[in-house]
Image (cartoon, rainbow, N blue to C red; front, side, top):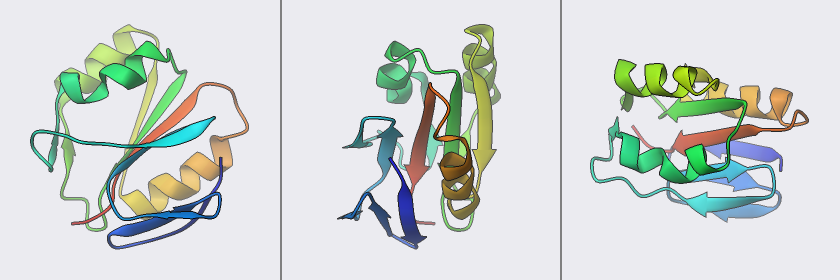
Length: 112
C-alpha cells in the first residue's frame, strides 16, 4: 500500500480516494470509526491489535487535534508494538518510508 497524497479531509491510497478516517494495513484500507472522533480508545484499535503489527503509526489530523492516550501507547508497547504518533501529513510520509517492512499499520485521522 502506498499513500499517494493527503490533504485536510481526504487521502489517496493506491489510486483510491477516501474522505473518512482510515486504517492502512499492508494489504488493504478500512474506514476507521471511533466513538469520539478526536480521542483513540482501546476498543478503537482492536482490529489493529489482532493483526499483531510491529509498528503502529497514528496520524492525529491536519493540525494534530486527535489524541492517543498514554494508556494506549503503554498497552501497545507492552505487546511489543512500537508506537509513532504524528500529525497526519508526517504520519503518511512515515508510513510510506516504513511500509516495505512487514507489520506496519497506520491509523489516520484526516481532519482537524
